[in-house]
Length: 117
Image (cartoon, rainbow, N blue to C red; front, side, top):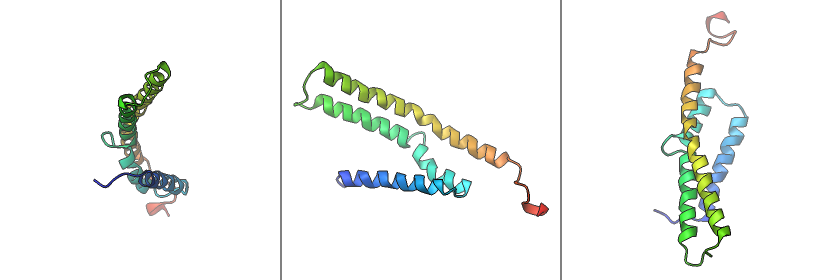
């Protein structure tokens, strides 16, 4: 695995910013859902990955030899862990995409399309 750097992580966040800007241009719904789907995957999507990342950071901070063993640090570590659970709880957004696709497929055609033009 190549070494991670702040720049590689920044590139990932810039890609998310690009996606947000693209979605604001109101692309085709099928394309929009397809682009967002990997981000919300129930096993590997951003909510799960960010939760895992925050838990891993909490472990690194807690186990580092120079981390002070104070109540303030313990509270900050707990905040990371709490935030990790909150992020992981968002895994259900994957099912929101499924429901949107289902409803979109069942929606009647827009006026003026198909044979009625």
